Image (cartoon, rainbow, N blue to C red):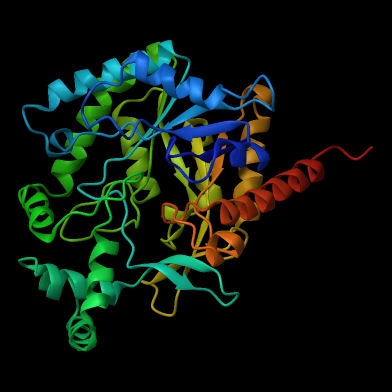
Length: 399
């Protein structure tokens, strides 16, 4: 694997030197300053490349290997007539990235929100802090804070009653914290939607169900993947996080079947997957190692992390990278075997996804994007690199 870390740009408190010293050679970044749907110019792309590579003459080299993300405009997801304009802009951005030597593009097709959690600072047994999702708390937000129409249809009577009882005991500050957590905006942004604006975004999907969202996704990929193949760009969709319907919105990238249908919708190598073990691993029915064995040739980017399902399996928290419900040994072994099929040419970029807030980052109150502190990811990367090395050596022929 090629070891990388995500970098949110010049304002990221985790510096490029931090990433370099962690042992990475690749950087995962995006031009978050450009509004969704607008073209990424060559000038803007080259500026980011120059920043990333500025110290390569003096120190070990870094390269912008993966775009995460080149975001998909909501009009494309909703299948509006304007989608063709935004698809053409997407194609132009891909051409510009390819011309600048950036050839892996991660994207997602989750309506409105890229991810959802209900707690950003869940205290672990060792005192570090992790991200957590609690179904009852999400129901509480949906039913009694947002008050989404028809929300009751999505929750059992037991969950509704428990959520209401907790809601009536919460302070104003606790309600505000939960609201801001659920409505945290796109990765790389620290903006949260207002409740009124957010409900309006949900209303725009009132006529879009599972079949419609799939059709819109397949239309999009059929328009852009052939060009990506021609350009030598690998597209890789990120799975839903969490992998289930939320807020009445359809989710169509949650299972192996979902991924297979997408890859078959445009059967070219460039139409691939960002294999996120954390997102996919929330579902017990996803056979992660088996999916890599079966579809490794269409995996262009790896997010390695693990979650732990709790006593209520609808609840989960981010576990340490080598614990939790993901069998990371079998996952990394499957990746190594996939890479060995084609030798050194087949190295998949991997980043340690998320990390616990710990040590200096915790005690000194450093403000980073949730899940993206330096030390927690450094710990995860070190564990994953050691696991990878051990597996590689174990697979060598006995002298």
